[in-house]
Amino acid sequence: MPFLNRLHIPGRSKPIEQAKPMDYYAQEYYSQDEQAQLPSQVSTQGGLAASSSNHSQNLDQTPEQVQLQQEQQQRQLAQQPQPQQHEQSIPIEQQQPQGEVETQPQQPQVVLPSQSLHLKSAVSKGKYSLTDFHIMRTLGTGSFGRVHLVRSVHNGRFYAIKVLKKAQVVRLKQVEHTNDERRMLKLVEHPFLIRMWGTFQDAKNLFMVMDYIEGGELFSLLRKSQRFPNSVAKFYAAEVTLAIDYLHLHNIIYRDLKPENILLDRHGHIKITDFGFAKQVETVTWTLCGTPDYIAPEVITTKPYNKSVDWWSLGILIYEMLAGCTPFYDQTPIKTYEKILAGKVHYPSHFHPDAVDLLGSLITADLTRRLGNLRNGAHDIRNHPWFGEVVWEKLLLKDIETPYEPPITAGVGDTSLFDHYPEEQLDYGVAGEDPYAQHFKDF
Image (tube, rainbow, N blue to C red; front, side, top):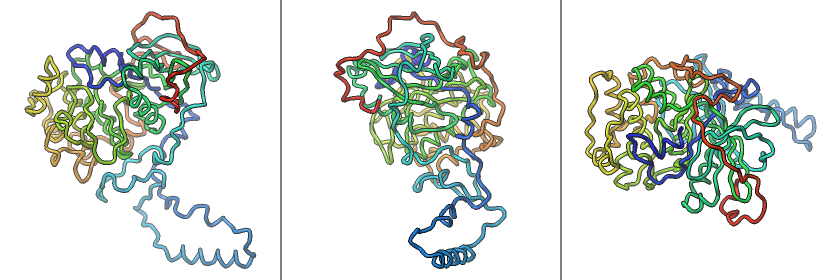
């Protein structure tokens, strides 16, 4: 279970600044009427530049003035250079924000889902209540509460509801992290990121309505397999790369990448979960947080750091998938930190040479050499020879066969890949005085 492994992982130290011991589940797939929300391919018809403006009319104008205005607009359009046959234009809502990753003209554009985050609403409250769901069973427990499998009384679909006890969140000083997580999950929209539908609260608890994913976590699959073949590790790493790149393009540092936070949908595609350490940062930040095995050296030394710490973590993830263990593992966090700062990485003989080359450019303390932190940003990672055969556009659309399909029955609330937990008397829906209301106004 993600939330349990995060606190008690054999051979893995606890995460620093434990923002959320309850990790999360995501839904596996989109229904037909949700397909329209998925990213469309790059348009070859000239984009949206000349849209409905030609059809607008000032009601104070005379017909003669309207005709004159239209003739002027037509002359202006005729003077504009027409796109060549090979040129493609990206719809406005899919363009990358200025000042982000610079790209070279010859490099293929991977279409990004969703519009700019600053145009999206961060409001998540007021849409659902406890009476909208029937609680089925507990999927996991943690320090702040528990996660339930629930079924909508309206559409019959299964969801996961994350319930956090307000008193525990306040006592453990996780108010800011909890509010940040709610906001991030409401804003982000990507095929490989968990989706949150809404939030609500009562006098004692916070509720987050999430997609339910049946396929379990990558951590469990890796432990059963001991290590992944080169091609399997590459598949999961490629999907992670697209998700992290999406977050970075919107100035979000994830800061807790590891197999425990990667879930598998019913088809075997990934969903990154647990945004407890995620933060919107335009330049640098200083907070020491993360899981010791995956923390970049600049974080350990309390230096200001940027989004490239996630690319360091990607290197550690790839190494662990290929080797079955992290490169700097030790029994105590202090020893692990010492090894990270020493920077000596041993590559097993079965590692592909291209993988060794990529990891050497990710697991490096030299920020002038770390891929993802250079002029071309994530393009340097996607264009590396190790990813040479990956068709990124197809991968983003989930149009590539997965190396593993979880053995579950879809659409029936299958929980066979989750442990059983004793149920308890729930205090949900309690009304009355709320001493913590001022801390969670957006829930």
